Length: 233
Image (cartoon, rainbow, N blue to C red):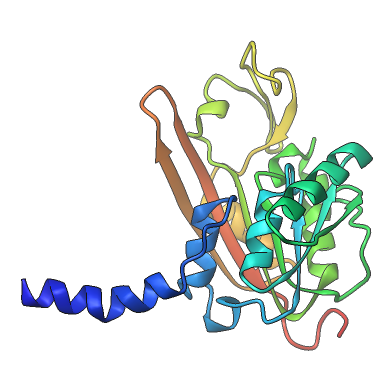
């Protein structure tokens, strides 16, 4: 009992002091704030961060709360403005521009951190996925880090998909908005690591799994860093 109390008064107390009540992905918060991507990424310290495919903007709000200057990319003006408004509701000013993962509308070397949660697999073929990785590397400064998630072959949305070859699948989920879409799928961690290694160093690929009983959400999680001397300062 004494050790348990000491833990809560010591380590846990320090962790609680740095806790934020962010509306976005709590896994991302823990990944960054927990130092799992290195101490340099635990706090934004006013540096610029990009969320490619930022959706409703909740992770933009979380990035702002962690001291980053949040920027995003989305497909339409309406989605972009909604993301900005949602971040603003949490006291965070974000800039979201209209673009795609293959054509990111920001200059070279602008960001210290780039996120792409559940975006890469929407490429219709593997060349488009590789182009998206190249674009993320382009907008990162030397030493900048990418963090992305993409479908694992056992993710629920991939069950029953039609494999068309060359890493492309057709989603077979009647009633889901992705039904019939072409997605790229990295069957093995090594395949994703190889694609990332064309543009990043220190590449790591792991898995994130959430069990909901009626479906299992399973994604690859990957990260890498733009080598010093590459990109723009």
